[in-house]
Length: 417
Image (cartoon, rainbow, N blue to C red; front, side):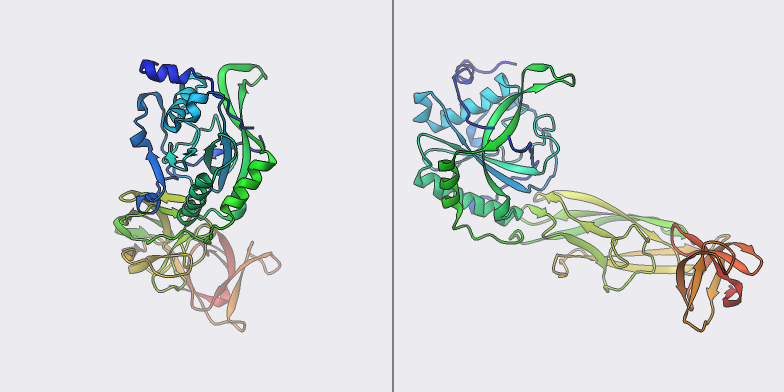
């Protein structure tokens, strides 16, 4: 693959990256859509402004929430590059792709000696051959000509603060490392020519101290600071379902805001019943709880993007018209405007046989594994509840007491409907 001669000559410049291994890393895909309104103050160049030859890079779109930020030094022996940060960054891009055969530049941000931030891979792709089996991370390289200077410290502090506010990456997840490009090996341990992977090791003490001092003033937030503007549409489900069967529901969630929506474990979203009560259509063992069919986490949804979600409802009540409303709430239980929708459907009896639990001395009736009083108890059902029964054995009925479980109840305490 060829590129302009000036770019070729840049790629052949000698660049020494002081870089090396503690853990391998997956670069988070779509994870770095930084809001321009936040980073304008110190942002140097976006990837588009860098005018890289994009035909050289292979991009893969994956939505992974970053859990780590790795900060590392980048050094060169080329004195000309030390005085021209843009050429230096150009060199890194072309060298890592054409000489080291990475699918794309393996870093997300590079801080110049002037304190400018180069967003070289703001929307990176996961490259599992380079970073495998480890949490998704943001890689921030610092061009070094001596020690970390004041401009770089200021820019890094602002960048870390922004990444924390957008993705919720916490202080303990920001690590200072040293990077190394190691030759990749085949399954039998043979070195693969011109193929590399990134590994990490401990940075030198001066660099660690400089970075620690630079980011000590960052005011970390526990969850991303974004205005959540969502809508739910294109709701799909069958109009009818047989008693005792499942109704599949599908809907589209769209980010109508101006900020990327980053959902991690610290700010998960929930699809819940609109009245916050347990649903009679809950699918046992599948729904996170009886009022929550879906837990939404580990998702990045850029402005204008949509994602399809699916869940099942179990038709466990008597035949007839049914309705259940849902809405999406944030981590604190607050409803998100524009996300409420209703599933209207009909339950058909078909050939199903139904029984109702009569009064008992305890207010409940044991469900047993087999049709005998000495058989193991597997559940309990309440007075007045109704179930599909599938078999009768003497004084016992076999009922379907959840979408995937059956058991036996004593005939004395039930009546057929």
